[in-house]
Amino acid sequence: MTAVEALGKIRVMLGLNEVELDETKVVGDASVETTDTTDITLASATLVDGTIVKTEGDFEVGKQLVVETEEGDIPAPEGSHETTDGQIISVDAEGVIVSIEEVVVEEEQKEQEFSNDFVNTLIEALKPSLDKIEELSNEVNKLKGEFMEFKDEPGAPKVYNNLNDYTSKEGELINGRIAKLVELRKNKSLNK
Image (cartoon, rainbow, N blue to C red; front, side, top):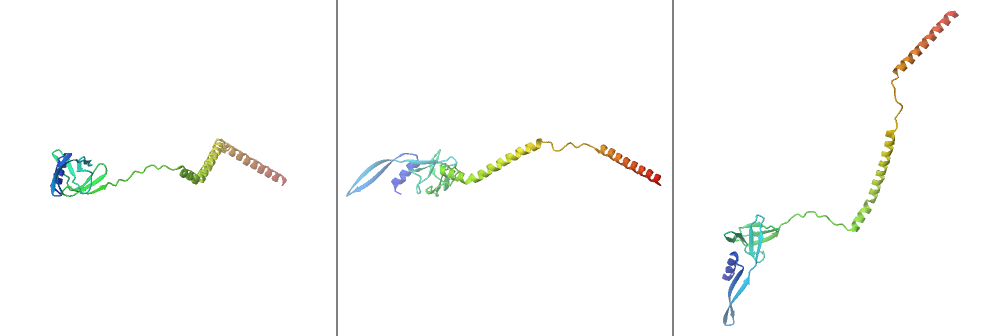
């Protein structure tokens, strides 16, 4: 790094946007001194913790990464720094960028738009199943109707407590048998 480049970097770190570079060019046997005024653009980014970091030009490997503070810009500490726009910038002990990586974010599943051909193919594949479902639905509705008719019909004639009728009939039968036996005995005793 030349002294001019070092001076330029110091000016960038101080937040100056213009840097005057004094260079001496040798043309043939004569030396010509030129003064160039160059605009230096600074790339800045916000880290996920809210810290603002900057570098000369774009964020590239080999460039100095500085942290903006109230006291001025200082070299970024060694380590990895994640920006809010999804980059991880790794720097060495001098604050020089050693790698820039994109944060791998799991993409949310997006709704896929299906073409009409796909939808039609899907409908054709499901048609037998849909027909079977409709057939079963009609059968269930028919069974419901039959059940409702059956439910409203009386089941059988009403059952009454006829124990008294039975005992009275049974008593009559017994009395009739006894009467017949008595009559038979009388007839037997008369016939003797």
